[in-house]
Amino acid sequence: MENGAVYGPTTEPHCKEPRRPCGCTRHRLKGWRLPAKVLQPFLSLLAVIFEEIVEDCSNCGGLYFFEFTSCTAFLLSLLILCVYCTVAYETFGKDKVEKV
Picture 1: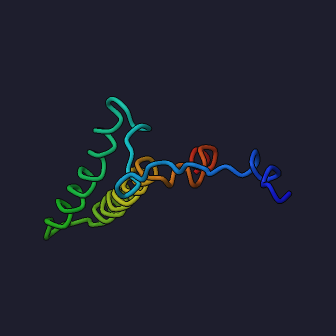
Picture 2: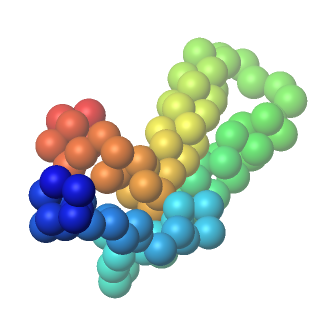
Picture 3: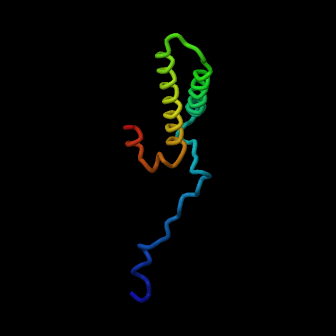
C-alpha cells in the first residue's frame, strides 16, 4: 500500500467539460427551430406592446384576455428558450423537460 499501487487504477483525474460562456449552446435547436424559438418571444412581446397602445375599447373583455395570453406566451417562450439553450436541459434531464 505504501507504493500507491492500490490507488493507481481507480483514482484518475476526471476531465471537466469546457465551460461555455453563460452555459449557452445551440446544438438542441438546429435548422429552422432556432430562429422560430427566438422569434416567438419577440412577436409575443410585440403583441403585448400593441395591446397597451389601445386607449379606448367598447368591450374590453377580449382585449384583456388577449393581453393575458400574449404576456403568458412571452414568458413561456422565454422559459423554453432558456431551457433548451442553456445547461438547464442537462441539469433537469430530457425526460423531465419533455414531461413539462
